[in-house]
Length: 609
Image (cartoon, rainbow, N blue to C red; front, side):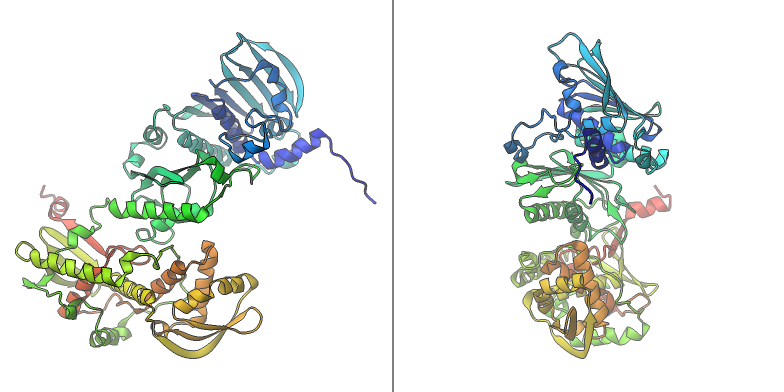
């Protein structure tokens, strides 16, 4: 029988290093954060060979007291906290006293430092965690540390490092985040003798320019908002400045680099109306929160964080960014609401916005449109529709009285503009796009996405008012795994509210008996599986998310498709309904509905200016 052994410090330090020192970039992060905690104003970082050969950090901070030069390499030796209570009010980046002993145990380290009260400093050298030299030295106030030959004594760890170019790229990403999150500190980052960037330590705007350049800054706009619990500020990318990956997303909590999936999704969902599939926004977001309301002591690298009131923060962040994006559409070819709130006429005649014309499509009108379905493209109900939080229950914009008020205001505004402007329907291009003119602007409207958005809003209203018609179908049995079944059980009442009649049918199985009338032609089983999967992906099953998924799917299926001829009356009805929407500019999947060209833009294209 094996006996219990007490491991010596050399082994335990190597074990700890496996958690704290995953790669060279982790060493850079820990050492730079130590310099930040030392109140440095300027920090220089030099690396060679992706940090494998050497990492050098030079700062002008407070330095280390000469009597503490050995202590800092002992496990759990720290100047950041002194009592258990301090763990619940952490204002520094480091606090565990693990980084330096972990780094020293798997590398060769040289450090020299001087604090203000002494005329000279101290230097110390370690190899594999063992002190090999310590002496007085001449140096400036601050600290200089050099880490060489990482994992020289743990070859198993060394072989798992990535290529030099990849490790270099990872370090650059870490340095970018450190320089942005601590923009009031001047950073100089040098790789293999080449200056990568240098910041002046003045402002966030200056840091963005120094790191990314003016071209990037010109595609960003500043955002700031605060409530009792949190202060949000940073820069958001313009809706046209989207990327194919999440590599340009920077999130900081109390200036700390953090990973939080739900916070990122909250920001991405604010963009959901404006971005197409597989495109991600560029953002730099700072959240300042009382340290007592967060817990950073839950991960070895302190990259994850817990909030006392997560839902409030997610909701506040989403609403802040959604409102800002709605107000800051900057692409001149994407139409803004005040560009199109005017009269809609054909052949110079005012299109009446009486109840008859602006109410939802009449049965006869719908039938005439749906008769064209033989010409429509088929819709695959297995297509996965991504979700976004959209609080319908408490959203006054979907209140019936608000709609009536909006209709009256719109009609009043339109009638009062009859003497000065009109929207002239020119016709239909390629049986897909509606062409129109208003003042000196030329408009192109995608009839499919326009009708899609109209149906989208109509179905939202039905859910809000609880008047969804149900269609009995041939019972469909769906077998779920344990996770999916648990998701369904936790969100069953949401399915009920959306017009589904679903019952439990044995272990981890359900049976679908009724669906909303609009889904009568869908594959009910695939639809339910997609919705459950979307809830799992998002991480929470809110009513709004389920509704959004249903509505977006339904809108795609029933909307007029491309290559469908519309007569003048159908075009008028479609446009008048579109103009009534709160956001008539993008479809449920982020595609633009209306494109505008000014006369000046057209003349530039023809080189007339």
